[in-house]
Image (cartoon, rainbow, N blue to C red; front, side):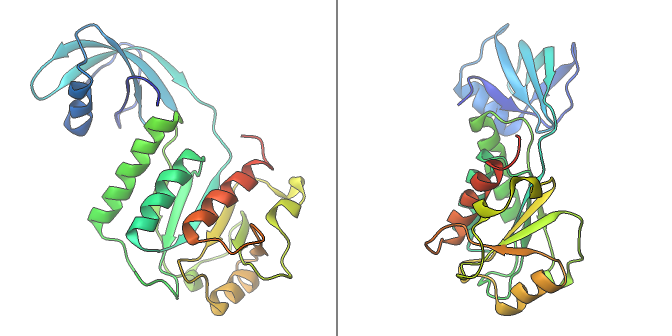
Length: 237
């Protein structure tokens, strides 16, 4: 884990004085941060700031921004995930954040046992993504959006793929490298997979391509990680 890295939603500019409160303040206190100590700040907006602790109070710590680095924009890889059980979604969001997913689209699939995400659960998923961002060292925070069922989606210009273990489908790694142009959307069903109706709609209306990820049938929480790894082997990160 990058040493002394903390998350603030603010934009960073040199010489700004920013206040750290709430959960990140707790993390600062646990780390026993001292006056004039330097720390790293991230905001999920491709910025990494070096800051100096200039004031420590009971309810906040004030940081002066010393320098700011801005990261280049990465290729867009969107994971469109059929809503799964919460413990599986937590795993997917955390690990896929580490593997450079840039957006998560969560949708109620026909075979989803769970059809919705509460505000509290969404907040939990966002917190897990922030923690993963800090841990893995990336600077851009993926967004998490709740989408309608697949049959309400409109065609996009993005390359859209979806996981389907049927033998007639090619493996993802067999698709030529020049086909992988950003943005890329990879659609994954929930625990019971995508329904035949959803697969038909993906192909006929969204012009998505069915692909296999592995000779074995993968669990939903494994599929997104394998897809991200294979896609990134085809593009420049």
